[in-house]
Image 1 (tube, rainbow over the protein chains, first blue to last red):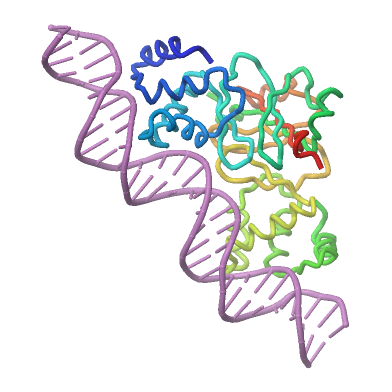
Image 2 (cartoon, each protein chain N blue to C red; image 1 turned 45 degrees about the vertical axis):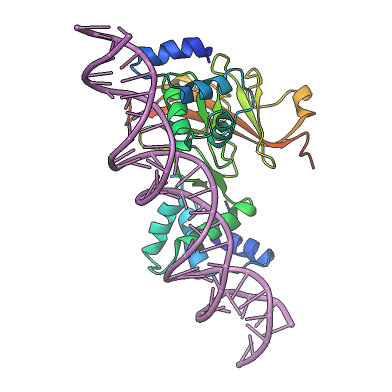
Length: 138
Length: 138
DNA sequence: CACCTTATCAACAATGATTGTCATCTACGA
DNA sequence: TCGTAGATGACAATCATTGTTGATAAGGTG
């Protein structure tokens, strides 16, 4: 995703407003590689703005998603994860015990290279193609 | 997944019991390629056993998942999908408008062949490796 | 720079998918 | 046939997420 200043411009360009709450959410997400849940972002932002509501964070995150500045991942761990890394195509490693999400290079199609295998034991690979079926095609 | 008779044996082998409700759920799933939601299975089973509860269907589906007889897919369409095709490795096409889920051969790693592209417009590919991270390793 | 429109805010209620509780029932091995 | 552990169904509860609404404030305009 872009930096906060550029995000500010992009939001205004869409007729959206940039509030302290939104700025705090964006600030937290820039460069963040932890794939936080909305709840986690909420907690972090609340440290500075004790009165923010969870709804506001959801709203902001959805707006950023609509702008293509973040990607919302549903990796099956219950809550959606927010991924600010939209510049580089990549896949995800999801730990089924702790729920941690890490990035992987997409060069490896559906098999992890030895180096990665030492740090992550894969039990299943899920490949999902999203789009439009023939009946729903534009 | 196996046929109802074999599933019956497998369940009993695990100390689980085979009830009319469970038999109806299994019957509905054998050979089913529609990736039904639990709710859809519930509706189908209710046609024969009007008193079944949704909880019972969830229970049965989870037991079958634990036996490896079905796979539970969270493709981000809200509800979990049940996939009885565990014999053949395959990927999934998810229509973002109607939510329909179809199977794809895994030969194509992360790109669809021309033939498939004519019947499905891919807008994004998601690859998720599930397993254990180094900290959670067995 | 003050104004005014309109998006955003916070609080709260509501939804949808899924799971927990528990008293009753029943599958099935002995 | 019987006894018991597992399964059932009715219901409440949970979790993530979204809808509602009156009040507030961002920021383009004059």
